[in-house]
Amino acid sequence: MRQLTCLFVKQAPCLFAELDFPTFPLPPSLDISNCGLLKPPFLPPPPPPEKLLWAPDIYLEKVVTLYPYVQKKDDELSFTEGVIIYVTRKYSNGWCEGVTSDAEGLFPGNYTEPLH
Image 1 (tube, rainbow, N blue to C red):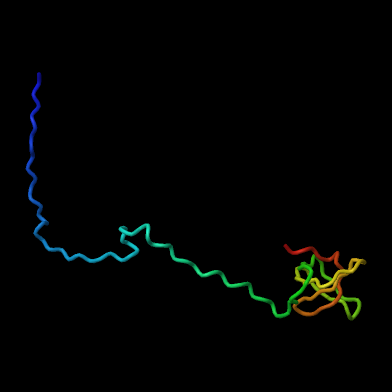
Image 2 (tube, rainbow, N blue to C red):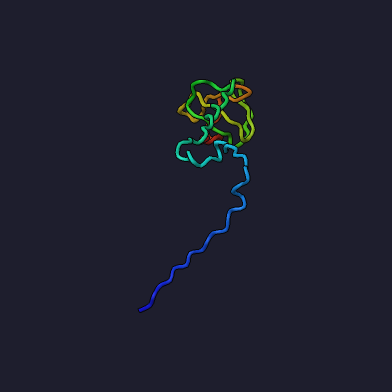
C-alpha cells in the first residue's frame, strides 16, 4: 500500500498588499456589476420626409416620365425624362392630369410609369 504525502507550500507575501492604491469608481458604461440593469440608449425617430410645397395633398399616384414631351396645347404639361408627376386625375383615353414642380396640366399617361 502506498502512502500519500501532502506538501503544503507557503505562499510568498504579496508585495502590493501594503501599498495603498486609490480606488476610483468605474463610469457606468464600464461597470459590469449592473450589466443587466442598463438599457441601451434610444435613438430618436427619423424626421418625417419633407413635404414638397408644390405637391398636392391628395393624388392618385406618383409617376416618373420615361420620355420628354412638349405640350401641344396650353392646358398640357411639358417635361423631360425623369420628372416626377403627381397624378390627380386619369381619363379613359389614356391622358392624365397632374402636377410637377413647375406646372400642372394634362399629359399622355403612356409617357410615364408608376413610381414605387
